[in-house]
Image 1 (cartoon, helix red, strand yellow):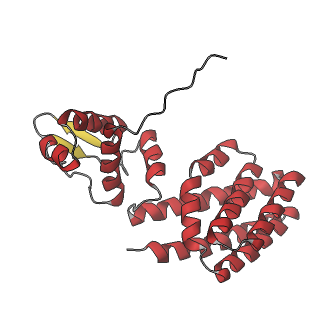
Image 2 (spheres, rainbow, N blue to C red):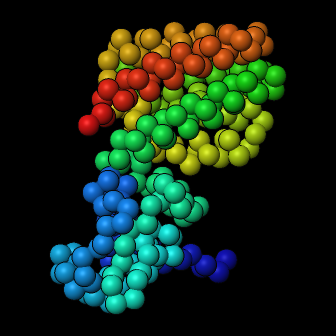
Image 3 (spheres, rainbow, N blue to C red):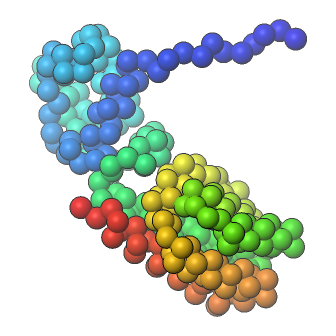
Length: 238
């Protein structure tokens, strides 16, 4: 068979430069309307050539993060008001870093909304095989002894829940945030008490799904997210 593999390359300086500027935007260090330092200053600060930096800024402009004004410089756009699909992809990459707290809270609320709808749909559509998978992951959660292993089992439970909704796009959205979700779960489930509460809540959700009880299932998923989101906001609040 012909060797058609692509050569693996080290992340380019151009990509690293744009990534660093994105990081400062998502963290709030760079705010809408801020003017970036001159290319000469910024290139010197980053230890790269002006040509590489220029390409990086052009990449940011293509994504919608900056606006280049001739003879005046590059200015930060308001990504919250003028968002693009490329910005969302960048947010996913940066979501385990020090993002702005409001943005962090918005991501949590988005996941709660997504899984609440998935739960409602799963009550009617979940299969016996999917219920069995949820039981396996719940058992894994109960027997886990570390935050790392608990986070993995917890994520698998919730990903199965989204696929049980029958909506492929919902499952794809959750899957795209897997690394971020796993990172935050590890940060939260550091004690046996928190893991025990979560297991009990997930057992109630699983029982409601098995009995096709929409009201109880919706209350159960709400309790899971009220507990988890409240705890995460306490951990990461500025």
